Length: 316
Image (tube, rainbow, N blue to C red; front, side, top):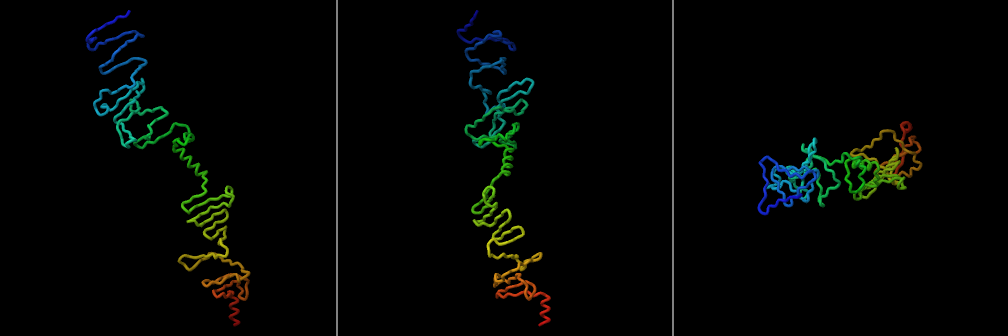
């Protein structure tokens, strides 16, 4: 049977002696309904329910603050974890972060930690910045790490994936092992590589300087300028060109060994020079040495041996 208490005018007060309690007991399934606003004054409000449903879309914490920021430095939610350290979601006035818009350090940061001050993790799959830059760490010497993942570097396959150090190390190692560079060039100076198994031409490393071919390195020879080196043979690449050995600052060219001169079947091929004397080998004649010379006057003669020289001195 319902009973109603109506107060037609003025306020209605229920008061007990300080320290006592007022209990609205509706049993285990009853309901207490307040049709107007509820103003609870005091230091502590305790709600013992399994579920708390609030229609308000915004919950205001630290209401009535008059200072420039949270006077007590932090405001937020605390989760009772029983025998474990309580969890906290706080706005901390003393924690700083870098403002990507102004590139300045700002005080006041949201933090996830426990009651001992240990930073706690956040589980989510997306962070939106509204189109602005995303700044991580902001201070100190920390790093962004993907530790705990399984072979993260092998999963970096999309163009927008962030690589870790292992991915970069592996990419460099693989790149060096499998690199296929055919040319290194700057301006008209270049190094070109050719391989007979790929290019259908003689395997060659070609050096071009200022547009001029200067060095050719092949499998069996090396050409530098107009000189060819093949095994123990040094020749000119141009037919009919002289090979000149010249010392810098000294009038001598030393030969550390024996000098073999090939036999010239036709000495007319030996051309005289106005600045040099030609020394060559030909079949021995009266001088019995087989070492001949031709001077700038195109005069040809044989160097005489010691025995032949003594014989001629005794005869003449």
